Length: 140
Image 1: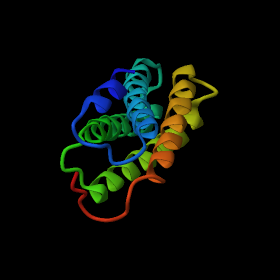
Image 2: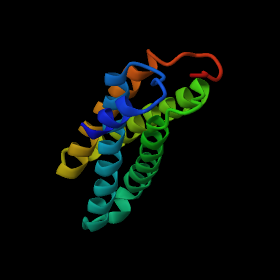
Image 3: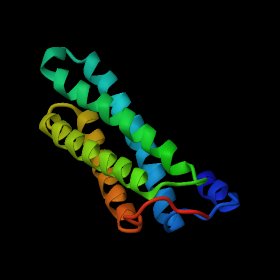
Image 4: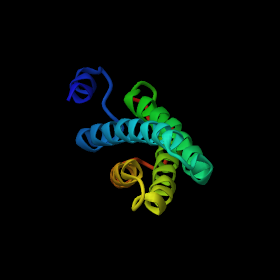
């Protein structure tokens, strides 16, 4: 994975265990992509109005997860408290999105796939949180 290679080459030590960090970055990127695609697929369905809530949550989750991946990729002057809050936001967004997509999973394959990807992101965020210090700024 290129993300792991980049983080290994970074002059600053990662905030947490590298495998958990890179797994979470990848999961957030996958989740953002799945949610964006699911929202677009929902827009292509016959009864778009019935999927309005799903579309909105998909798009919110995509934005939060994309931002989380970018923040996790930065290692210079990392603030653990800020990172923790952002990862918690991604965990919450992916859980809420999975729950919404699961409501439509029987009818729409794209919602079933999106729910599955969101659940993987939720789990990856939960795992990463176990290694993020709860304190203030870390100086490397």
